[in-house]
Image (tube, rainbow, N blue to C red; front, side, top):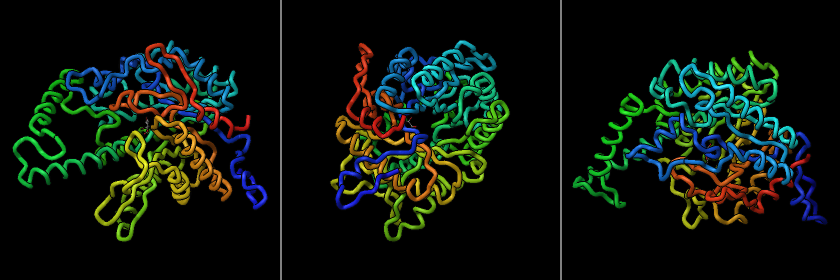
Length: 442
Ligand code: BGC
């Protein structure tokens, strides 16, 4: 709740605090921090000759072994919650072979959280899948919801009694967003080629001939590794049918969780942009929001909470999404620095989703920690304003606790509240860690 800001005490606005049971914490995902996720689809792709990854994840930031230190860092900073993911490829490295020692590992992580006064919020799928799942058609196959529910049941029967909040799937809408970006890119390429630039090289220093040759070689290599011509990983461009499969997987997982541990609050998370319509762009913006959010409402209506993940805004006019405004501050990801987006997205989602909202990710990749601090302060004042207006926001998780493996971009993006020297795996908290911790009531 924000303290009253009056004329006499203008500083009061900086003393924003939240209710005691409001979660303040940070988020990570197994593959991005643990290291050596060798049975996963991502690991296989990172090690292809024709890989799209800048570098492999390798030991990552060794969170698999150093989680006690990392959890202590959060507790020392004052935080009261930690969102992390359980890795399916560790629990079920081969189809139907479940590994109890990995369950023990995650049980230890949960216990370490509790010993440190930290609420563990678990995600059951954060982009990576076991490699075997992809050989069976992955996230476009009708069998996948059944496989996912079987894994979820195995985990929940063992760990469910120790948890209160579980996210089934991280950014369930990611594949649809990737499909839209891929389509936009394809259209741009076609337009360039049709304008006469068909001799191999095009503007922007691209070399289409080489790209096509690489794509063919990569497809051949994928066939050798996965036994399928097209790998349908969770973040591959999704078809509408694949989108339905993701929702079926969520619903099957939700049922399995409720059966094994009925006390658990269940939800999924969505990647949501603050979509702003410029004059003439209203229709485009409404369509974009429907694709990104509202068409999922029937599938999530029975959830206990919705995880909101937001990083920036998108402005749209009649022609579609626009580049960031000229002169705008950019993050390392080339996103516009726009922390106000979070408040806008929470308000918009709350119009239609009537359950609890949790900000499961919000953050910025920057080498300037003072900008991270400014980002967090603005984002949290937006959250506080929403709560003041009776929107049921239950927590805020900054992405990410540690500088980590940013998927295809490798280790080049620094989102963390804590930096890591990956040679020695030494952790160095940034000032923003303590800043965020000060917002928590413990
Ligand atoms: C994902 C994270 C990712 C972050 C920053 C989110 O879409 O859940 O895994 O690292 O954004 O790009």
